[in-house]
Image (cartoon, rainbow, N blue to C red; front, side, top):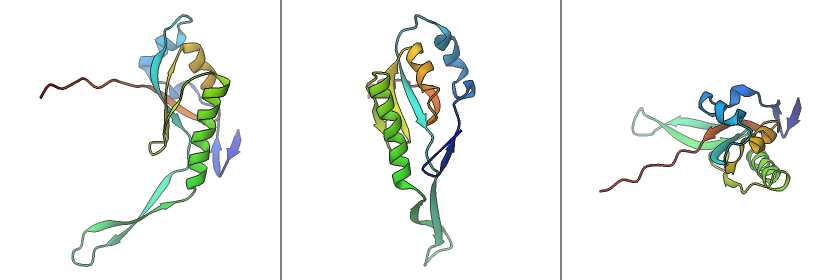
Length: 130
């Protein structure tokens, strides 16, 4: 177990991989797939206050406990994916995720990284004809 910028992390287990990916992940010769890699980042917090003219609750301001910690964790995992495993990583900072195209062998390697929270298939959206 390691501590990273106020965030306690542990090695990812198989629970972080959806059941639909497990057969592909166990295939030694599996082809590369587009995946979303969730990063373990500090949670965001939002403060609320009552509106002046109504009784409705409105967001007052976003309260980030560790904004730089979020950015740093995401960038650290993106650097690992790019430099250690050789993947092209597209960072989705707001979502706290990274999109990669990886083979099962590559996925098994980065699942062991302490900042990897989970892996999900990146589903392509069907085109709509208006």
